[in-house]
Image (tube, rainbow, N blue to C red; front, side, top):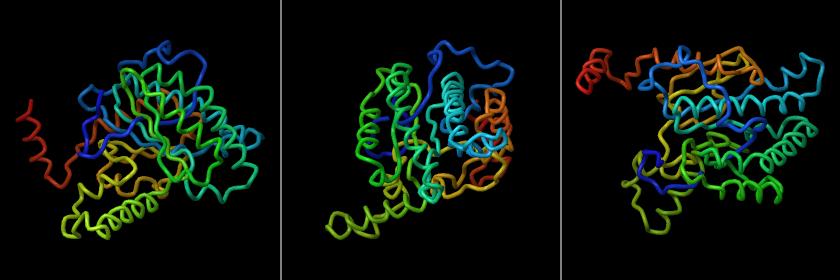
Length: 281
C-alpha cells in the first residue's frame, strides 16, 4: 500500500522494538473503544515520555524504564495496525537527549541495537515498514549499519509505515531542508522564486507522507519539545499524564476517540466544514 501524500520521491519504510507473541496473534482492541473508521487518523506522532520517572518510582535505574517502554511501543504498533492507521512516527531519541547522563545514553544505544536485531524482521513480516529519521552521523558504525539493514527489510504488503526519530530535532529538519534548497539554487537548478511550500516539504524527513493528524505526548508534559515543528501546524494535540510504559490499549483508544470527536477546520468555519462533509456524504 502506497501512502498518498506530497509529490516527493518515495522512500522505503523505519524502526524499533517489540516481541512476545507475534503481532497478528494479539487480541483485538475492543470495538466500543474505537471511533468510527472514517475518523481514524492516517498518521500519528508520539512523544514517548516518562520512562525514567516510571523506573524511579519503582526504585529502579532509568534504563529499566526504557526497557519497559519497548513493550508500550509494541502495543502502539498493534493498535495502529488494528485501527487502520497508515503511519506512526515515534520520538525515540532527540538531539537534546545527548545531554543526559552517559550511562543512560549508553544503555539506550545498547537497547536500541539489541531491539533492532531481534525485532526488525518480525515487523516486516507483519506489514510494518521501518525508517529512521534524524542525523545518524553521531551513532556508532555498528548501529548505523543495523538501521540500514532494518530499513532494507521492506514488507511485501505495507500496512503501517513506522518512522523512528533518532538524534532528531524539528529545527535540524528545517535547517537541513533549507540547506538542500540553497544548494540547488547555488547550482543553478532552482530559482529562489520557485521555492514554495510543496518543494520545501519534499526536503523534510517525512516527505511523501501525510502530515500527522494526531500528536500524543505521555508523561504529563504539555509541550512539543522540538518534534516535527513544521509538520504539526494543524495537528490535533493530545496530552496525558500516563507515563509511557503504562500507556496501553485503553489509553490509545481514548486518544483516538478524542480525535474523532474534534472538528478539524483548517481555517474554515464550522458551517463550511459541515457543509463540505454533507456534500461528500
